[in-house]
Length: 407
Ligand code: HEM
Image 1 (cartoon, rainbow, N blue to C red):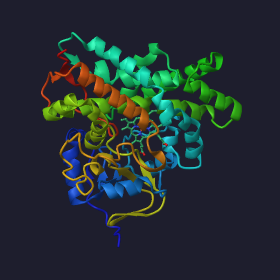
Image 2: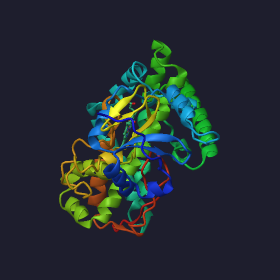
Image 3: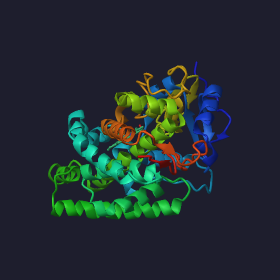
């Protein structure tokens, strides 16, 4: 029978945890796989770390994502005077923070843009952008692979797809970096304001000068079918732009880090670039860009494994922990681009399964294949063991990845 026992309130998700993510997650999974823990701001969260539990939780409708209720739950659970980042601004009213039927209605509006066929049609453009970025790296003795390659590729692809003008892409990067950084709340609020303002202007522009892009299509849906409010439109564009690049940057960055740490794997890919599809899945499993699913809360008591999580509790589904669960992936701590990583949870599971998974795969595979073909002697330009991770409670990504392209 599930128990209602509340486990020790272990502090979690501070910067030390983020630096040592997998070892800390493994300790939790081995000791108490469903555990109540406390964030640095004092918010109690229930953390799920086993693969089977995580997969079941992601598909469980009793775990709600409705943001207004989540805000209430967070407020009710925070200690007095705590300074916690609330996602209360207009940008957060998007489908990832909604349950059906709103979630279903909003997702339906954009799902067509991300089918396999539509994504496949983007391949030539993704290849072109990748080639140009690699051309720019050639001849340099040292570059930050994140700055020069992993960041500009996905931001350019998603900006073109959505319809964001090129001149604002650097601003965009600065805003999303600040928004995802867990350490400065005031700066994050300013960034959210600036970004909301920019998106409002962009929508006005599309009304005046329609383009052949997703945003114009969404503006039409708003104006003609009245199925999307202006607020929902802004939040949708925000979600697509942020989800569409912050994650893919780190698929490439984290993935290349592990290839450099495992020269035998890099050599295998160099010998046979057709291994690239499996390599990307293993990168997602072994060290994917998302540490936990986004916040959920228990709309009623929910049994998970041996524990019953009471109603009204915040739940984090530990995707990074589940993906290294040895019960699911034998020899799970070994990075092996030839293994069957099928079923990993790096893109989530259930109704919120990543809308951009096909696009992310296309970008990740193209980036890696061309990188290994163009720069077969790529080597690290700094100590790989001391790689520093950004302090974010959502995204798992490096601060920098200095390399010698060697080509
Ligand atoms: C949702 C991961 C790339 C758009 C999600 C979720 C995960 C995820 C884990 C579910 C979160 C949850 O249930 O709490 C990733 C990873 C990526 C990636 C690891 C890259 C390697 C992209 C791209 C786009 C995108 C390129 C393009 C637009 C979205 C959207 C959702 C989502 C819109 C929300 C779907 C919904 O609520 O129904 N992603 N993502 N993602 N992702 Fe991605």
